[in-house]
Image (cartoon, rainbow, N blue to C red):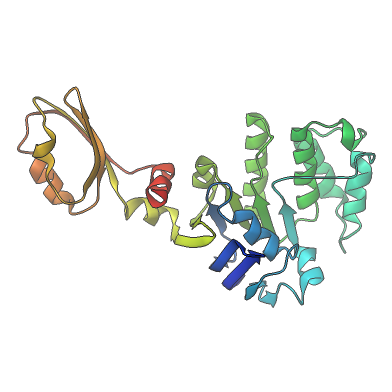
Length: 290
């Protein structure tokens, strides 16, 4: 079953493109990464899915139901954390959380208290007295207190210190083990690499690649390091070798092709060291953006 399904989803702001022809399928029970730099269209996609803005064309379904005609019903089972959180400044944290809990047709008290304790929130303070990081922690509790079936996260860790980031990841992993599907949008690729099963790369408002992370890394350029004696760039005239840098008899670059051809080439050289390894997700990402 697809928890999220979009078909040619498009949003224009007047003549300015937000997203165009975005087609995604997020399977039940997966943690799906949605990556791209700021301005690529991540938040526009998410706000459209959440019914905060309306699409120009195309369609989207959550739990198999249209996002526009079934919006209120769908939001009962969705936990959403936006990239920026804004609240009523004069409210106390506990009042805001109880106000939020009132929207859901279930008892949320136990889970709310668990999350407040994990995130080390002082619920007696007013919103206006909180730092940006503490406001983000309020958003995390607010988005998860009803144990949603779908968790939608838009740049969720901004403002959190490293300790709180790890606690947040632990919470998301726990929710996932309990059956939640997670849609995780970020430009911090190490986060996506740690959490996600599959990933979609968005560029200029359009999806350019959707793949599971393991395949994305394996079916891509290999990162190479070669150290030898009297190395010259013209010794590496092999199709598939790119972005070569040679300094002090150390060659770095990337290779995509038959690995046997590469090993045959380097076996003819006077070498001291060879490293061939998978690129990081960040290096793959930059390849698609360059």
